[in-house]
Amino acid sequence: MNGAVAPDDAPPHEHVEFVKSVMAEFDQAHHARYYPKLAPNGRTLEEWYQTEHAEATLITNVSLSNKVTAIVDQFMRAVDDKLPNMYGWFEPTSWHMTVRALVPK
Image 1: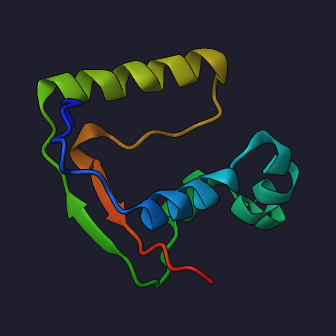
Image 2: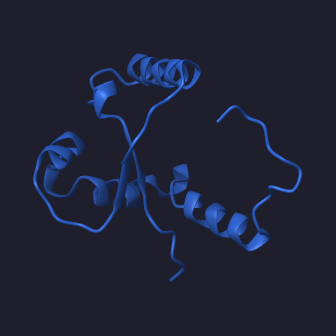
């Protein structure tokens, strides 16, 4: 999280390529196709997180350094400045990390 990477800490090439393919799904060219999957039938993301539903996932609470917390706060303010009233943010006491497997099809 501090930006330091050990020289021998590089992920395998096939992992890098797979992550690139996943991230490509969020490219601007795909927004029109992707967004309806996020909000079917007008559902909002805030509503999704506040409605009970079952799914398999791994979630852990996080304890962030002051430096990382400041970066997250800065990011949220920047988003709110550019897209006012678009996002509902978790309270810092509810911040968590969700891990999901990136499994190739």
